[in-house]
Image (tube, rainbow, N blue to C red; front, top):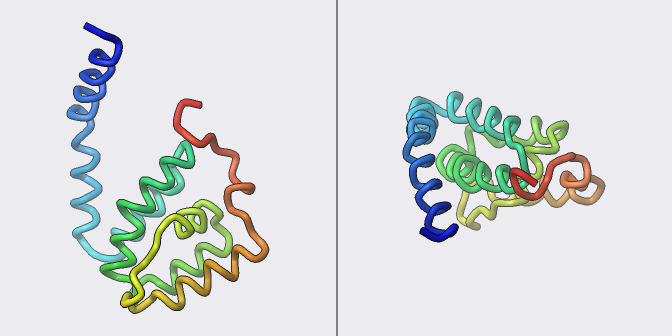
Length: 130
């Protein structure tokens, strides 16, 4: 068996063993907006690398903004004033223009980026394990 094949199946078996975590996050997300917000912040804080933050941005923050943006926009902007990890995640997603929070979200991110570079403020590798 080649190294590629071994790695492929190793990843497959590890992913299957850890599927419970993905299911648990999805279940928490479905409870209510507060639960979804809290688990999103927990995942952002627990990220070990920039690619982890991008994963959370795409898979938790974006859906949360799409489904509950009006309910979280104030929390989002208030928290991101002091949370560079959250601001970095916000920079990684693009809301659709018809999203009710599009203007506020885009304005906030643009204003923050005038004087803050969240990547420079975070001591994280680009990829987990680097």
